[in-house]
Length: 415
Length: 97
Image (cartoon, rainbow over all chains, first blue to last red; front, side, top):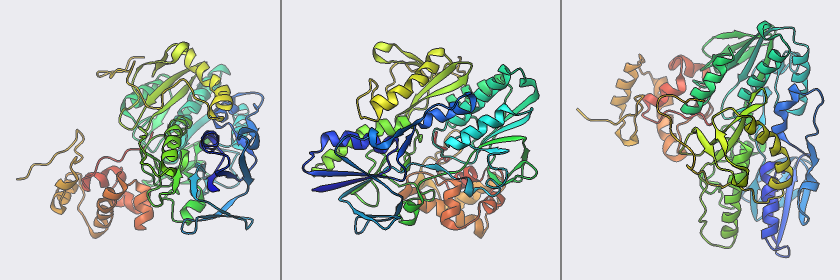
């Protein structure tokens, strides 16, 4: 038997396991998936938790999401030995592999910024990338008497890079609906030099922030949080006070990747950006947020790149050359408040552009423009995620980005 | 007088057109006089780029050279990642979307 071990049963790991189970012969291949806990969290749903009265059900059993014939082990990975091709679990168990797929994602690390964790964590300092964190934000927003709300990103890259902007738009709409918008000052603090990285989208999103009277503080790299003074302090000694802070902590890959020498300075696995094959070890691949691809850490990237990866992997284990090439394709719905959203679609070479996004029989969606359809698209995605994406079924969207419907604006982007 | 190729913001577009003399001149343009500490960061960026394929981020420079981020802010005030890339003749670091 040939042994394939997949570390992580999140979005990428589950998709890859399910796709490969259908394509690899049961009597020749043993597929083992290892995850530290038995439940799969629908992470895109976390964004809405702070604004909903009842917490939605975002969890499903990982076992139920994996096809029959896939072995699931629940356990924490302690160490990886790429020379002997073994994974050592924290409880002492050892799992050998012939091929390894790393899909352990990226996690918010509040421990990496001095002053973030402490008595004020989940009181006046919050994050919304965890279920508990999102619930605490909900309570904080409900009881907020007014003052300054600071939404803050520690550093790039982060998973779902548009989420902090979406959170800001939703919070602004939330206070407006409650009739207390004039008592809340909202400041968006970013290490980038604009609202977003790519110029056209940055201008467009910057304008949306402007229209909603949300101040933006750019090039702000936080050194520490003075929780007692409720103040963010940057490396160049700027200070921003807050009454309520919603931060996105530094994101890092799994520590065992750094410890094993496979990870970079943020524990991401350096891979070939077209094939997802580890630069250091050819029998190791890293999919989803766990790798160092120069594109968004997003479910869409995990999806598009996994399809490319599966085709390449089948060629690779057959001793053939890998012929499929990932182009960095990502697309994201961006929730902008008031039941509207916009859609961005881009890849390694093409930044998000305005226009229309063709979508089979469902008709086109507008790119970089606020519409209700984009909001509904975002909500409908939850069903698609559980029932089509994770089982590894094909979606009616191409893996490679297409220029169809897109246009480059001249000087201005008009909504 | 040699010709160099730059993008619209003045970042060198050809890795091979850089030299240490040019670095000193680029640094002077943004008001920086290069010391040994500056060179430590610049040399790391130059060496890292060909294998890594991307301009090193501030955090990468800090972790792999052992120079604290605070120090990099002192050496290249305001926007250290961009200023280091500029002086090292590398593309402007891209914050990933």
